[in-house]
Length: 163
Image 1 (cartoon, rainbow, N blue to C red):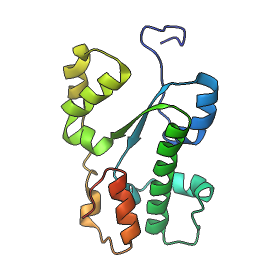
Image 2 (image 1 turned 30 degrees about the horizontal axis):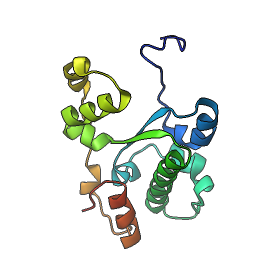
Image 3 (image 1 turned 180 degrees about the vertical axis):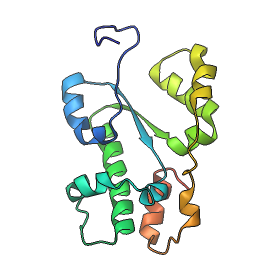
Image 4 (image 1 turned 60 degrees about the vertical axis):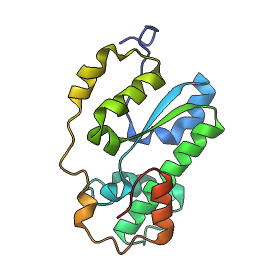
């Protein structure tokens, strides 16, 4: 799709885009940004910890913290910052729970289409594309004794349940 084709718009998926939201806002003005969040406790137990390793220092994450604590603190701070930057810079932002998308694809796709100003003509086709991975809810099989009350409050504020 060409960037000059204004009928459909354009976009890309890069998990760390939230780092450059202020720059994108300066360049493009009021744009729409879909901020996809997966449950932070599931992210803690992911094998992929590249973001906390590569970017944790930008959020004051002490590299000496236990890995699970560092990963959770990074997830909280990165998502809080992305949402705050979106509001601060007038970005039209949709926080989209990946977990909700997988559990209830119809309503999540409806919200996404509405946010993007698209008609629901492709709704059923889009819903059929959702294939939840087996790793959703993996944190329920893990010990969570490292999660503080402050962490729990932040996770809930970002829209996720905490066992």
